[in-house]
Amino acid sequence: MLREARVGGRVVLDLGVGSGLVAEAVLDELPEASLVGIDFSEAMLELARARLDRFGPRVHLVRHDLAEIGDLALPAGRYAAAFSVQTLHHLSDADKESAIAWSTGVVESGALIVIVDRVAVPESLFREWAAVWRRIDPATPATYAEYEGQLACGGDRPADVHDQLSWLRNAGLDAMCVHAYGNRVVLVGRKPNP
Ligand SMILES: C[S@@+](CC[C@H](N)C(=O)[O-])C[C@H]1O[C@@H](n2cnc3c(N)ncnc32)[C@H](O)[C@@H]1O
Image 1 (cartoon, rainbow, N blue to C red):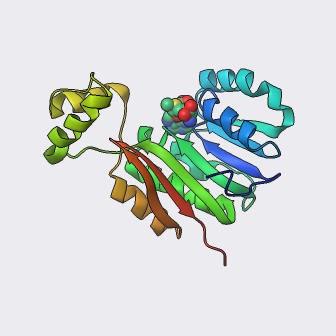
Image 2 (image 1 turned 60 degrees about the vertical axis):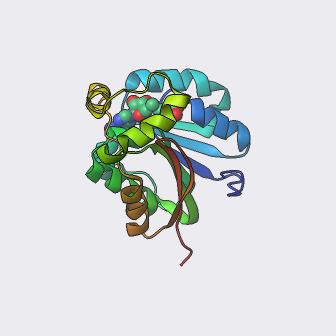
């Protein structure tokens, strides 16, 4: 998707850069682009620095809590795309929505916002989800209580897929789910041109 976005020599934003695994793939795929990666964990940023060192000035890493994204002063309107992989589920729903709104504010018109993350499994459909997901991951919890316990243990707060699409749309983006796999989805939004 980012290749299709014709990013060229512009800048992309990675919300929750972690160890830089996805950032590295993006920078390899977009050889002229630069990347700003945000994470609140110094330990993860240290890993990202080591992994992304070979890209030199194409990488700028920022330590910041996405739950307080409104306080982050980055130059606005200059990002060709923003993406967040396996990160937003760590935030409260209000903070997820704020992060999406903030990202929409800082990207260029026409830019893509891509979210790859897990989504909530409703209790009434847990058995159906587990029947599918257990074929992929034999360690899938046996009961909803066990599933909830695992979420609590990991500090994970995945949101409903429709809520996430609503937040993208409320921010003014055209949005859709382009891929779903069990409770993993790829959501994409485009900031319209004025
Ligand atoms: C599962 S890792 C994903 C890293 C990377 N996107 C990837 O896919 O390889 C989630 C990352 O989100 C970061 N994170 C979680 N909550 C955060 C928050 N409130 N603010 C900033 N970063 C956060 C963690 O430190 C971690 O590096």
